[in-house]
Image (cartoon, rainbow, N blue to C red; front, side, top):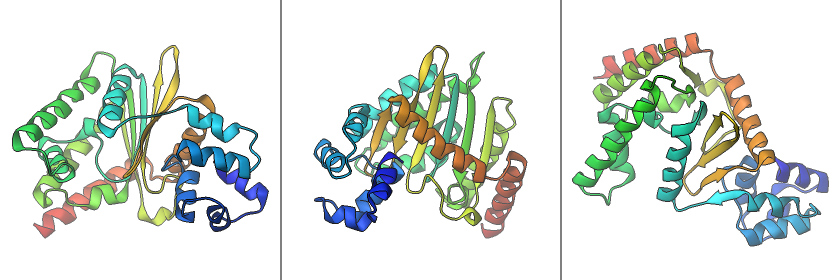
Length: 259
């Protein structure tokens, strides 16, 4: 959001800004959407080109970058302590709402280099995390799913129908809300990646970003506010919970007819 405002103020298109840097203009678009984070060198260059007076360079310092495995481990630590979790998922059902069969299929496809035993361990670890929602004081768990998430038959129609049934059952819990962002909403504020907002008692919010080439934790308050704004726009464009349930039920019936 900050980068976009600075670029527009300078009167440049994404392509024009990209031509002044070593990166393709498509990367500029990803930076502006928050789906990828520029390197320190690119961040400093953009700061200089756009006359940001150090603002972009300062934001870079507050984004924690980890190898994907380490980032996810850190996220799980935050997740276990959160009082509220708001998530937009672009590609799959969130881990805490996955069935065993769905989780196994997702991990097997995402980690083809892992052995069957390693996949078993990862699936067991994911299922164990469900205890967060079953604790005496579970967090508010509010999920917005892209329509593609409920329509892609992960593992085939039977596995996907069971997953959708689980999703509907979980959404009946008082602390779980599920919404679907329909295809009809068109382009939206979180295109290309997933966003998780975690809130805590007595501590600042944290954002977890996850995409094909980016895994990052954001704690800078200004940056967190910007990602929260993106999530709010997606949340506002999604179907209400009751209408989302009807759509999930409809998709489940269609999967049954196809099997």
